[in-house]
Length: 118
Image (cartoon, rainbow, N blue to C red; front, side, top):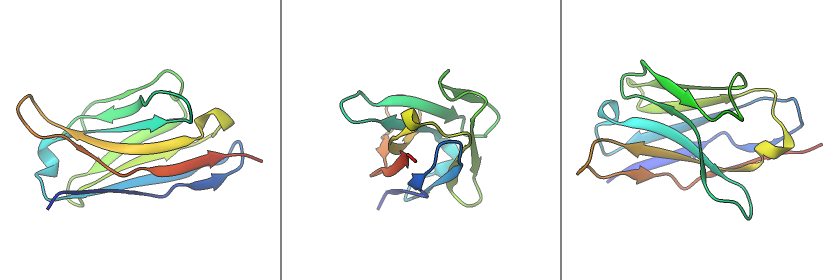
């Protein structure tokens, strides 16, 4: 049974930090690229950050570069998103996404709420 479970969201003041975790099971985690997406109320879901299966390459949305860091631990089947210098516009539900090449199934987590507010 495949599970993709995010955790670590919450309420934080502007300028604060949060670390999101995404624990995966039921598939070969080390073969999947992992990404974090977010969706704010009334907006489309957008890519925040991605990391290759080996962890050797990452990419970020311009809006989070230099503030967010994606990483993974293939031994723990977990991907992380370290979020620093948070802004109110970072408020959204954050989703974890697992993808491989064409023809392979893809998986979404259920999301975790991040609220940045004073």
